[in-house]
Structures are given as structure tokens and as C-alpha cells.
Image 1: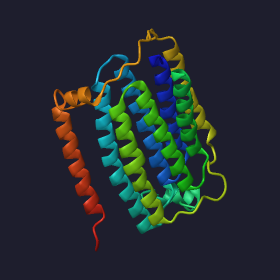
Image 2: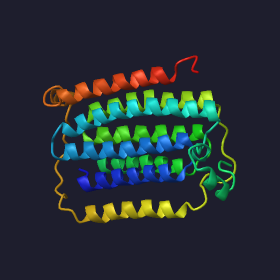
Image 3: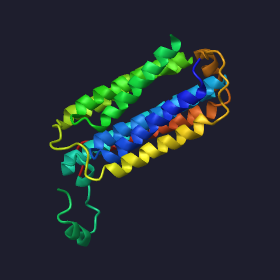
Image 4: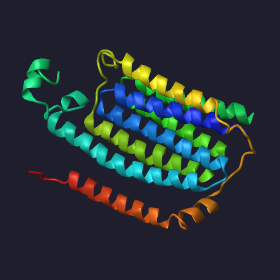
Length: 112
Length: 161
């Protein structure tokens, strides 16, 4: 039998890996994939804890988390597609239209 | 044997998630993400949650990855040239590693070590909990999905000004 601690460590590893993907990769699609990995770490935490205490609440939480993830991802993917359609933006740096013009001159040309 | 399968599957899930950090082509990254999600479904099954495992395969590896692949097809992305990681990647990576090490140290000293036997909580118990005390949350999820549907239809409408 797997102790709960090991499951939680694996879930934490998945969560931090997803966080690293969100922080480090600059493509919009990769940011969304990192979010998926983070969600999966949270789901593993909920399921492992629910199984440890013999409770169905962890699985209920995971099912609701899947619904929330699907709703979030649909809207986010359409926004990524619209950003690509309107601005030809694939990376996060391309979406810098709200940046101050003074600051843009300082750093040298905004999106490169 | 059970332990070997569990840890091997966990290693596959983690390595496939880590591959997202270094891959350049988005389709390759999507394939690794599918592998990670399927490995996680097997982990759920091994933990004794067959309903969530089946839903993981259907929803994540089925529906959500189809959305990702459709978007990649529409956008016709080419792989990035140059290094995939931006300059100054060491700082956030070090912080993420420290975060995991903190959780690892915290959990390795926790008193949760009492190991029972593998207990299966089947779909019947989950359904009873889902439509019993958590009925309001199910209604809230339905409203959220309706809102997401309206947002998707609005954002993808034709003939925008």
C-alpha cells in the first residue's frame, strides 16, 4: 500500500513542474498546458487524500475540478486563437499593447 | 508488484510533465501531456478511484487534448527557433525546486504514515455523495458550464466589427 505522503509528494512535484512551465515557457499554449499540469497535481492530492480517509469527497472535488478546468480551457483557448488572429501573437511578449510607450522606448521596441 | 507499478507510473507522469519544459514543438508537447494525463489516470485507478480514472481518460485525454490539437492545427504553429527557455530561467526554476523541496521535507516528517489497505470507492458512493450533500455544487457547475458556452459562442461569432 502506498502511504499518503508519497502520493502527496508526487502531486506536489506535478504542481511545481506545472508552475515552472507557466513561469518559464513564453508561448501561450505552453502556459495553458502548464496550467493543466498544475490542475492535475491538485486532482491527485484530492483523490489520494480522499482514498486515505475512505471518503468519496475527494473524488467529488476532482470531478468538479474537471468541469471547472474544461470551462476555463474553452474560453482561454478561444482567447489565444483571437490573439493569434488579431495580433499574430503566439508568445506572451507579443501581447504588450497596454504597456507604457515611454517604457517601451526604454526597453527598446517592445515585442521582438 | 503494486508498489512497482505505482512508482513507475508516477515517474512516467512526472517525466512527461517535465518534458514540457524543454520541448520546442507544440504538438510534441501535447503528446507528452497526453502521456502524463494517461499516467495520472492509471494512478487514480491504482489509488482505488475507478470513476475518476475513467473520467480523466475521457475528459482530459479525450476532449481537452482534442481542443489543444485543433487550436494547433488552426494556428499552424512552427517550432520555436533558438533556445526554448528564455534568459534568466534559473531563478524561477530554482524557486519551483525549493517549493517542492519544502513540501517534501514537511511531508517526510508528517504523522500520516499509517498505511491501510487499498480501498476502492466505486462510482456508486461517488454518485451518492455528488447528488446528495453536494447537489448545490453540481448546480453551480452547470451554471458555470452554461456561462462558458455563452462566452465561447460570443467570442467566436462571425462578423465582428
